[in-house]
Image (cartoon, rainbow over all chains, first blue to last red; front, top):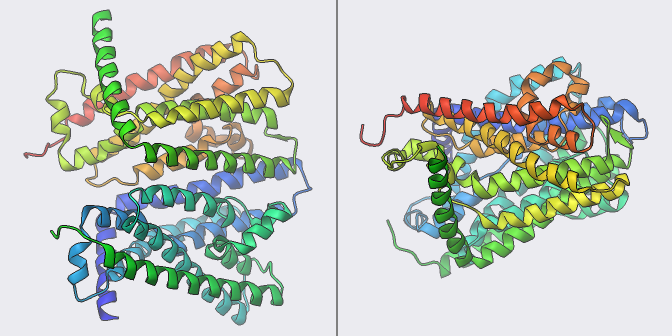
Length: 262
Length: 266
């Protein structure tokens, strides 16, 4: 744990050094939901057959802004590059797991990102005349649990994408393909309840809903008690599946790996 | 002047041939990129279908018109991604690690050379998809695609490209002020997201936002509006002028920023 906290501190220092760059990421992260919010607002101006109110849609995208940075992961492509170029080799002999360095960077950069983001989203809540949903203690604990599991699943998916570089040259294409599905089925594009029923069912099976949409659905109190328990159960199953996939990929990948140490 | 233009075109042709040969070495990459690209086409179609299941028009754009708009955007974006994107995105890195020195020492315009070093040929498929979007859009609206329309699409694609190129290059110039600027790719994502819908969607909600989205207007909203006859003829003149002004402005700013560049050896 001490080693991991040292990596988190390093991650914070590194992200702080390049704060203009991190601010760029934050601003770009805000833009997409705001644009989609604008589109839905225009649709709602002239139409009332949308199965959600204007307030619900605005709240969804504002919560999306807030939840997204918590669950974001970006290490895959760097891991793939480390594997391809042999830079991962020195880490294999170090007295700490390679994942610590990746996790430290992820959490450290998130701390800086959130320090920029929370005031901006707070301001947007104020400008758009929205209030943050008030949750009872049980729902709050459920939300936090779901958020942590969502971050875990997303991080592990990203990690596995990076580790695919042990076997294939073009891990970037794998990442692109995963992003494609995540884009539609995680709720990043629009609330999943706006999808036609068939696609909602598909989203309920795939892991992507459990990386983003579920915590927001809990915040918006969109689920009944039984739906909530069922969804959290599936989320836990997906987390366990990706932990196993990660462990298998890492151990098998390292065994077959050969590179010049540098 | 004319001799100079031919000299630059010849250099571009040579580099393009070299890059084509290089890309053909990595056929697997070429194929996977195209498969993923088709996947993104489906995402775009899903977005439109989901939105239009609730409405017949968004900010005055019908479903067919939106497909024509998106087709234009795809063609313009493919031209940028194929001809300039890897080069423009590499500007921050070459400023950071000092490899810009190699460009500055060549007897050519440095912005031209750094913009055309590498090309990505698989973007050709995007042009085909864009064309299919346009044809599909025309079939939904029930209007006929005339030769004049086709000519307009070709001409305005290049003017849209000039606006698009200027937008991305201006952000890359920020690298002269920050040693690491990897968020340039994320800025690309922001602008691309903003471009996916006509700019009047944003101005419908907040009219004042026109100041912010003004440059986006010239990439695909205005070209598509002209082709669909949604704006008065004066806008044709504006569309033919403003992107050129943007290009001159970028060139001017590039030269100004170069004065800040400290090179690898200093």
